[in-house]
Length: 352
Image (cartoon, rainbow, N blue to C red):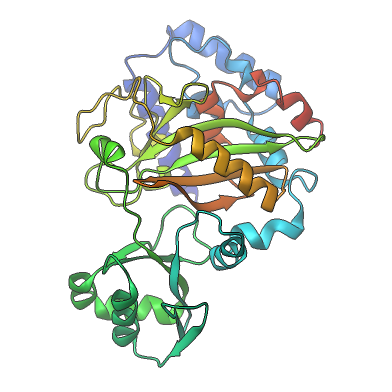
C-alpha cells in the first residue's frame, strides 16, 4: 500500500515537473502553500486539478478533498432512498423504462450462475440454463446489432466492460465463463453513435457527463458538462481507464479548447484528439439542447439533489446510460473552472 501511494505521488510529481505550461516556480510554491492553508489540508488537489498551470488565477475557487468528500457523503444532497435506483444499473433501467425514457436497452443479465434474457416482444424474462455459450449467443440473436455491451451491474470506472460479438465470444469463452459465474452483469444493446461524434473518435461511445442540481424550490440546474473520449483504440471513454475529457460550454453546446486527463495516465492537455487529429474548440455537439431536456426529465423521475448523468448521442438523439449519486466532483470542478465560482454552490455547501 505504501509503495502504491509512493508511485502515485511520483507520477504526479513527474507530470508537474515535465509540464511546460506550469507557472513560475516561486508563484507555484506560494499558491500551493496558500491553497493548503486555506483548505486546511495538504495541497494535493492544487496539483491534481492542474491549478499550477498558467491561466488558472482563481485556484482557491476549486473544491478541496474535504469539500468533495462532504458533498459526496451528504445525506441532505443524497437521499438514501434513491441510492439503489442510481447505483444498480438493472434497477435503474427497469424503473426508467416504464416512463418511456430514452435509455440504453438492456437485453439480458446474470446473477452469477443464473442467466436471464429479455424476450423480444415483451418484458418477460427467460431463465437460461447454465451454459454461458448458449446464453451469450441467445443475446446476440436478440440484438439488433448482433453484438452487446457487457458491464457489471454495479459498474464504476469502466472495469470488466466488454463488447461481445461472435468472434470475441468464441475467442474468449473460457475467460467470459469464469468472470460471469463469479459476478453479476448486464448486457446492453450496442449504442450507435452519431457520425459527428465519430469524427472525433469512433472506437468508443463518447459520453457526456452532466452534473444536475435540484434546488430548494424544485428548479433543476445543469451545473456543468464535459465530454469524455477514449484514446489509442480503447472502447471505453472513462478517465479511470486513461481516457480524456473536454469541458463543454453549456450555453452554446460546444467543446472548449483543451482536454484533461488524470495524472496517472500522463495528464495530457490537448487541443485536438490524439487519434483523429480533430480539433476540440468550437466543435458543436449534436442534440445538445435535447440532452439538457433529457437531463431535466431524469431529475424529475429521480429527484436527488445532486446527480452525475452519463448521456450518449445517437443519430436519433440522446440516450441515458446511467446516473451517479456518488460521482466524483473532481472532473466537473475542473470542467466548470472552479465550482466555488458557480452561483448555486453557496446553497449546495450549506447542505454539507
